[in-house]
Amino acid sequence: MKANIIEGSYYEMGFKVGSQIKRFFKPPPCPPEKLEFSRQCKEIARQYIPDLLEEIKGFCDGGNYNLESMEAFLLALGFEFFHTPEGGCTVFAIGSKLTESGFPIFARNYDWDESFQDLCGISFIHPEGKLKSITFSDHMIGIYGGKNETGLTIAILLAENYTGKWQPGIRMILSTRWILDNCRTTEEAVSFLEQVPHVRGQIFMIADTDDNIARVETAPPRIAVTYSKNDYLYTTNHYQVKSFEQYSDPSLIPPNSVERFNKVKNFLENRKSKIALKDIIEFLKSHEEGVCNHFEFEGRKCGTIYSWVTEIDKTSDPIHLMATIGPPCKFNYEKYTFS
Image (cartoon, rainbow, N blue to C red):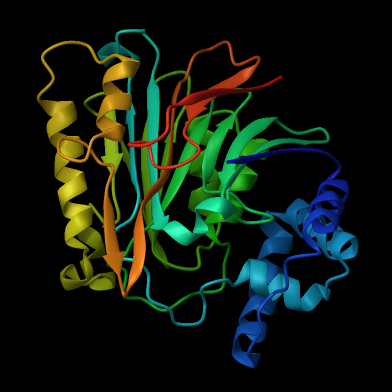
């Protein structure tokens, strides 16, 4: 998995990334309806994530890209219809009372098309005047999750059973990046997500050093927040809140999502002793008892293409977590730090 250090003003960070990838990345053509949708999203972004618009401008200048076309790509990616693999990601967080180390633990398996594995990377991000973080993504701007210097940790997933239309708003990978740049607690992150318009059905898992664990589910214009009552929370790729029934279709829930959800449930609810980090790693790696999986979708090989896990301690300098550079069933977890 590639690692990249990105520091400076938002414009400077964007310029650096744009200049790095201009030789091999060209955004796809943008149909008129997507362009119009992205313009509406940009107006919302001006209000909620203005610094990231500056980063996109720097990216376009560094890579010599057309600004409006790139904004459409980054602000509205996925607006056009497409099929997603019938699997998905697994995320869970465990409070300190249940762990052997006495620290909260956050874990994530990222499942997608295996052809994207080489595009995934780790970024060490430090915007000028903002919080440092270690993040994961296959995007030039926007992230799927990570951990910042205060210990705040977050990951995102699609709600595959969402049936509503896309709404002008902020894509989840941009909301997640903004949260790690600016928020120090789960409460702050949830507050941001409650205010910002969301483009589609998605799920956020958030945890901090004070054992505050939250699952945030969105179905525009609705949002539901669940806080941990049993010192843990978990999610896969379908809604848990009953109030979203009008925005979802049970027939769209991938069987794989239900299977993984039940495996995490059994893992957490049937433990008879405190959970060690090594136990979680084995669970993330296992096919039979755990949530590492591989499958085919429309002729494409899909499955868990990387995994990461971290103890959320109060001393986050340097920021640290453990991740695999490929499927956890084949690759060891390596420690990454950023100070």
